[in-house]
Image (tube, rainbow, N blue to C red; front, side):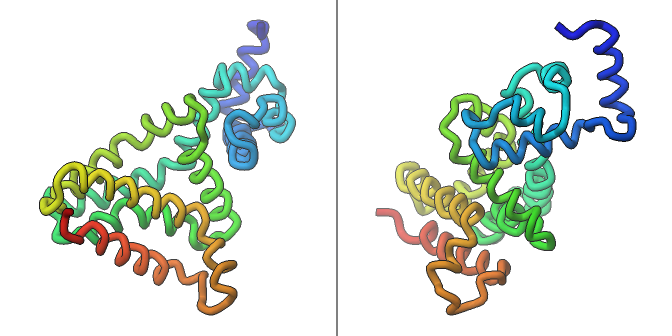
Length: 224
């Protein structure tokens, strides 16, 4: 139990950290790196505190549990992408003119994230991939929560644009859509290994164009 005097000190520290003290963002940076490298089960609170050069009691006080800390780290990292998705959907309106527009609105904010900063992009891709693939029930619940609004909007728009498909065909194809973009956003570097230098894999605009063309063709194909 943290003593009252220490609680007051921690509150001041979080709001106005003194020189040399660990800030909230430094806690979250350390947590994100640990989650990205080790997954939810492998990320240890002690390791996060050590990396942040922080008192273990401070982490427990700020977030109370590893789940709360992970939720905060995910929300912080994913918030700009989610906001951009929602802004793009708002700009599209209720009846977008093409399937391609809907796909771009949802997937470009992830695929092109931090393109100007390779180091930040690599961390984002590792974190994003971990969030989407980690098998822990805690992570699955967090994913459903933080991605609920843009995902519901995306699925609704896409379903409206795929009136030629019955529900069975549409949702199985949607399953494939998420799989394609999940892999593309998290493992972009792999294509360079496979291509063995045959083309410029750093051209992300060309990459997303080709992926969207491929996915849209699958969605547009007649139902069977």
